Length: 188
Image 1: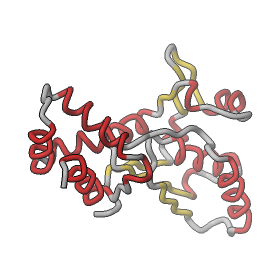
Image 2 (image 1 turned 180 degrees about the vertical axis):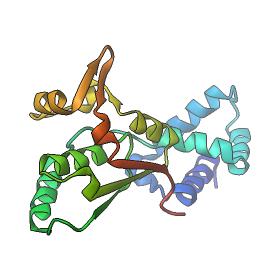
Image 3 (image 1 turned 60 degrees about the vertical axis):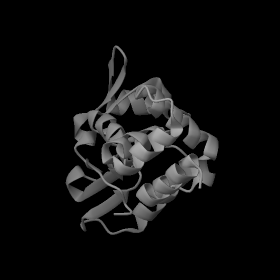
Image 4 (image 1 turned 90 degrees about the horizontal axis):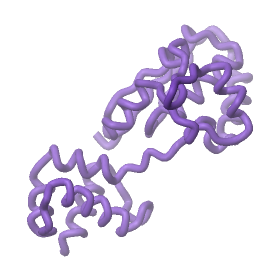
């Protein structure tokens, strides 16, 4: 088995990554970025290192995961979520799990749906989980650039729930407090 295949197998074992979802070239690029950062030009040496070093495994996973998301991405699931909410009796606590949550746009979009539909933040909780510590750190901060807003809801969403800062937008604390973020691998 060649070195890249060994690393692909490691990623499958660690995070359940099916290489076909992102392609071998993406894995190879991530390996090259890590090797460059470590000033290591020898793939065989890097392979031996990553196979035994959990810290490097974590760093490689951070290079491989793709935290591409935005608020109300794929509008249809949020419309269906709202429809289902209307069939649920109020009063019972609502618990929601968002996995993977990347940088937080999805679980925050869920919170915004609930708040817009009249749910009190005390009536629901959202647990948001991702394997990427970097993504979770960004999510907890609730700071976003224009890139996180796509589609027709942009202006209304921003004006209602965000404060504009010099480099982007910060989500209102009353929305951020509705989501509890944690770093975890669901395969564990």
